[in-house]
Image (cartoon, rainbow, N blue to C red):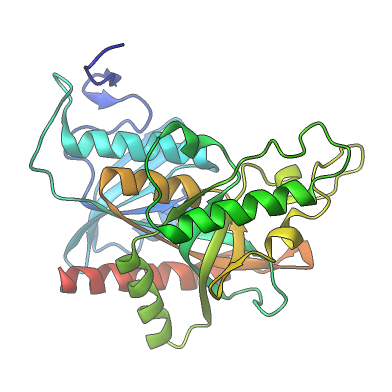
Amino acid sequence: MTDKSEIVVINERLYHLGIKKGDLADNVFIVGDPARAIRVSKEFDKIEREISNREFLTFTGTYKGIPVSVIGTGIGTDNVEIALVEAYIAHEFDLKDSTRKSDCPPMTFIRLGTSGGVHPDIAPETLAISSYALGLDNAGLYYDQSPDDEIVERIESKAKQILSDAALSPSRFKGKIIPYASKASSEITDALAKQAAKHNVKFEVGITVSSPGFYGPSSRYIEGLKNTFPDIKGSLSKLEIDGLRVINMEMESSLFFHLCSQMGYRAGTICTVISASTSSDDVVDYDAAIGGTINIGLKTLVDLNKID
């Protein structure tokens, strides 16, 4: 085992993002779809850097005079892990000798995403603002840390029981899926909700479930394939802690909050709900729906920088 950070740099650029030292701003929007990164960047006052490497697409510039970046990560917590860790390295490390600096200010990350609804009363085009995330993936388990608060522990305990009960019986995997929970930065959650309310946008604040896949892990039926859970969305929709309920399902926020908490960075997620709880194969106009999410995210960025 080595005490030296194992950082892969090729021609002064980090291996996956392809960024050099100084290529990222301290404020970063995270999006799954690289095309959404392009759309967000078009709102910038100016674009100073555009970096495309593998499936990752990064733009850095300013918005309302505020230095800002947007990273298109692709789908899933595994891609988010790579993007966040390399952003952290670019921000806090000397890439020549892999040493970490001690005087780096914390970064701010806001995820702008899409998601599926889990309750009939949360209609498509509602904005889902995450206060916590429940990870059905296992990426977060590789970064050990204490729970952020008692609610995280209660979400994990209740979700584990729900999943065990919901799995088909008999099933080889019954009781073997161990979920983890993570907490968004309250400051970001509150700022997103404040902007949504200010601009009369319908929104909900609650727990976001992060799934490791779009089909089986979300209980979508495909003939010829057998799901472990007949209705994971319906089962987890019953999870509620002190009035805080599951409001949507997507594929990134669990690891996103978990890692940013360990890094000491602010992180929050706002997602457009693009499908109803009873018809996950019927989605609203994606391009129109995501515009509201981007708009509230940008306004939140400005509000947070006024506070700072």
